[in-house]
Image (cartoon, rainbow, N blue to C red):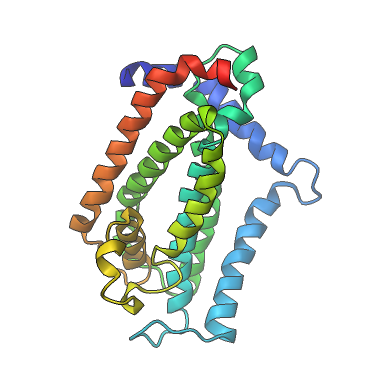
Length: 265
């Protein structure tokens, strides 16, 4: 089944890449600055976080006097969480939003989540590339430890794809899922060490807190980008196992329900 889907994706790679290009171009088609907004918007986001938290509010991380430390800590979490949330959010509605295409055209349905992931990845590459450029400019680039980022990204993207595709299939049959997950993602964000360090939490919460697979993922990003340290790979094992499990769940759901989705959308 997996090999069949991979072959199908490869056979329709032209359709997939064309869809990615069209979506990116249509986003800025009628704007005066065009695709420049793809750079300007994330650049403004990074500058706002930096100026407000490091200069105006002068927020400091516990045990660190560096004025930029909290801004880097915040960006490391928020930018990567944005990729995670975008993949889940768009995958859970991708089959419903493309109902007409599914009914009128013959193509592997699995291409639609792939298009979502590639679009989200393109957006992420732009904003994260700007963030890394900012780190170089201010002398905070972490160095060779940056090569640890791709494995962590793979774990995060796999987790997002598995959850997003599973929820997208379920959402075709139970439409309340989309509304419910939007609320869950908000709680999930605040239950992850993105805007606060885990050290501020009371001891009684920590056992439940560690059940969150995104805690180890986001902490790994922060270790690399803020502290210039290799992540503790052992802490990423549970997140990796959960990512594999939800991907297998997505494959099983797709295999059983792909044929029925056309009648439900």
